[in-house]
Image: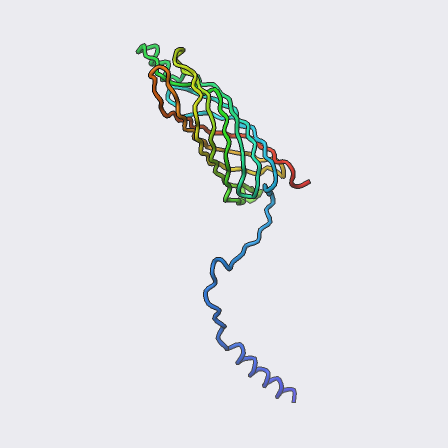
Length: 221
């Protein structure tokens, strides 16, 4: 009796296993939901930053700068923010060479300060394995800002224009802990500048590399 029951069970089970799988069709990408809890969230937090930087691509000036930022993170990927900076443009080797060897002073302007405000977008949050020893969490962001920039002519009579400015930036925020990040940013400011000596308007570009530390309020305790 037991052998007969075992034989019957084997036949039925074999037929069940041999049936073709049910075709449910193609799964749409919108049907796939990935749930991930961020280790270092930003939504609802305020971020303060202090940076040192330089404008390395200006032919006639060498400009160190210090910048201070404030960002209000409305969501994980959207923020409102402002940045204020000061600096000083020193004469580059090319500028001094034109002055001393050719008696020509280029009509260049040194950066003295700026104040910008705008929005930030951080669409990427990721983590990376560092040599198998540590997991680094970071995001990638872009900023669009507008404001004013104060500069001074390298020629004494050239004026000190206050220029309307549009600014775009990209960068990364590397999380060092619950409240601290290392932030690296490449920023490009486009200025509409009034030039006193030529009685004209022109565009000037200030591209800078910034590295600094930021502090996030709130969050984990």
